[in-house]
Image 1 (tube, rainbow, N blue to C red):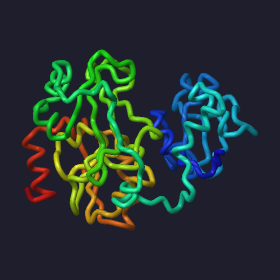
Image 2 (image 1 turned 180 degrees about the vertical axis):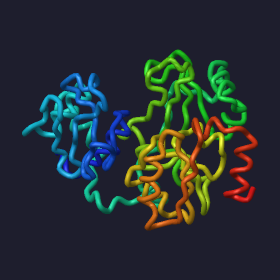
Image 3 (image 1 turned 90 degrees about the vertical axis):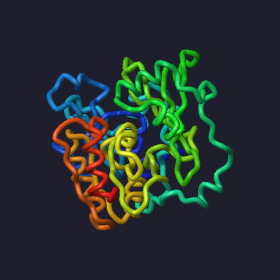
Length: 309
């Protein structure tokens, strides 16, 4: 049974790769999110994202076509996912929390209590294949160093689901809990494909990437390649906006430096405001690009300023 009021709508949208405008952004109320309406030609209108969803009740309505009046949240999810209502319930299940105001971070004891051992795809091999090596080289990384330092895996052309992807394990409290598949061909519309919540020990958006290599001070970035560029002490949200679980994790660090992509200053300010009451925060703005594009000398200077090394 699904109770819409207990669903973390932002966690759902982020995990399923559905673009949205967060609460408080332009033309979006502080208790709503905005997405492109799947029932009409919303994409043809300037500003897009004309379908609003209430964060608490999950009531929804499109400003353009009027879809959503007196309709349940499941009908929207079924349309977005192109599935049945029963399948929509199954998709939403991992994002339903018993008390949305008291979301807790999974700790070591929680992980010990989880049943089973997490497995990467059977097709993943512990070998740096030529295509995957070329992908890392073109991103100006040392392929061998990155592949070994972050315990990466490769998938060749034998998999439909993970074909030509670099498998990036996600660790939390030193235990593998999920993974991301990065498209090394750069031709797939979905550059980063997440392991589904129901297949993970802990859903990706309930963790931050590289958590175990951070101590008292962290630099928060968006993506896994940003972390690879900066190194230990950097953690990634996997997206521009933090979920409640990620905010809980970040709030426990003494100092949080926020360095999102150059086009995400609003998201950086939102994150800083959400953390301000719990820890010391500071925003680092980039003139252009993202942290993964930084030059080596700039990274060294940044690390000296923040970590002293």
